[in-house]
Amino acid sequence: MSVRVRFAPSPTGLLHVGALRTVLYDYLLAKKQGGQCILRIEDTDRSRYNAESENEFVETLRWVGIAFDEGPHVGGIHAPYRQSERQEAGIYQKWIDELQAKGHAYKAFETSQELDEMREFQQVNKVPVGYFGGDWRDADQSKVDAAIAEGKPFVVRMRIPRNKKIVVQDAIRGRIEFDSNNLPDPVLLKADGMPTYHFAAMVDDHLMEITHVLRGEEWLPSFPIHWLLFEMFGWEPPVFVHCSVIVGKDGKKLSKRHGATRVLDYMAQGYLKSALKNFIALIGWSPGSDEEKFNEEELIARFDISGLQESPGRFDIDKLNWLNGDRIRSFTPAQVLQEIEALHAEPHTHHFWDNFEDEETLPNQPKRDGKEIWRKFDHLVQEAKVRRNYVLQCIKEEQERVTNLIEFGEACEFFLVEEPPMDSKGVEKWLKHEHVPELLQFIKSNFGNEPMTPELMKAKVIEFQESKGIEKFGVIVNPIRVAMTGKTSGPGLFELMSVLGPERIAKRAERALDLIS
Ligand code: GLU
Image (cartoon, rainbow, N blue to C red):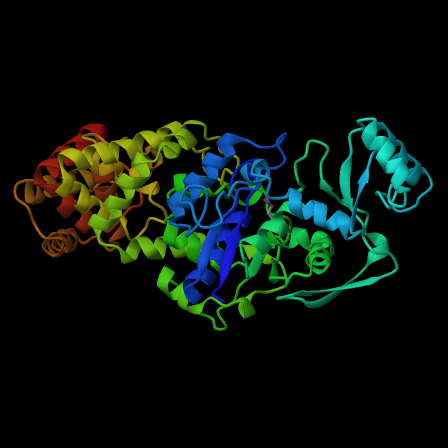
């Protein structure tokens, strides 16, 4: 049978990196095996369902480029793929009836007040908390019939066998044993007639012929319930794969402190989907070698469940930055610009920067201003519409230094404005030397008239330096850099000057001269 995997989110919030990893593994496994990847929306908890969240999932998956073979938006032979619609279609009823007929499930009529009292009693008496039978697990049929006749609301609970060792198989951890006496009888069907996750997911996994269930390790405690359900129905269980938790670099649970956890925020910050997928795939999966750079085809070719690790996967943002910068450098400037324009067109990008609050100011760095960051990024894109070739040259110069697409806005700004703001420390440190006025005059008269190659400019500047008997090249190039860019760091000086061209060079040299005169 061909591999069939499913991504089964409950749309109650944002799509975080943990879920992205699960769906990525689903996708890689299906692609590798020529199987199918299915999207199933688990929305039976109506109090928590959120339509915006479903959109968020769809948008994020569209952005990362994970397409499904079956699902609510593409259809398929097992439609519908939304559990609320499956419930309406009566798909679960038959199976809940069958479990009750086999004695594996029973109706329980406790009110929520009675359940609260039970819990309180258990807590006070320090006995295991949970529903281990209550009044209904072993109730006479006549008592049950009477409660039904009275119209009392009920849930259907699973009758977990007692005094039993439940042995399950996880693809990463192997055999795991659970003591059935520690498992309360879970609700399978709620009073509103909706199935719970435990029940709906397993019935659907069976009906949809899922061969591999990949999900987060947080589902391990419920795993014996799911395994037992397959046993009770006499169905062949799929291969269960519980992916390890993702922790920050400090080993603590991943949170905002370690960077964003919402996937769309990575997009908005200028990470490439290819770099993000490469990075995410390696959190908790090893390709069996030290290699770290993989494009999508390579990930598909190399991905294997046997490489998944039990120990927590570390989320190291420095590695993502490295992979992203590396990928940016591998592009042509035209490809980079295309990516920049696509990012600019994503509504979430502007929204993200408009609402950005810098929570991780770096030492000795001012807080980043999200609106300013967007303004410069937007400026770059607008400029590209009117002088594409010039912008492409600017991108080419900055490509070596930039780690994400958003940074191009700030990095290219000095190329694009007529009078770049002057860094006052840079002015103080470099423009106040005695030789600077003469140096700037030299720049203006030698490079301010016609275009020149970086090599020729450099040779001429060295000549100037030698003729003046100045020993350190730094006191030559740094004043020129401050005059040309307003900044103390940036791409290669002569290269950037060659891009700026004679007119801007002349104007900027003059402006710096005015500033110090
Ligand atoms: N609906 C569950 C969730 O969103 C899915 C868990 C599973 O994959 O089985 O966490």
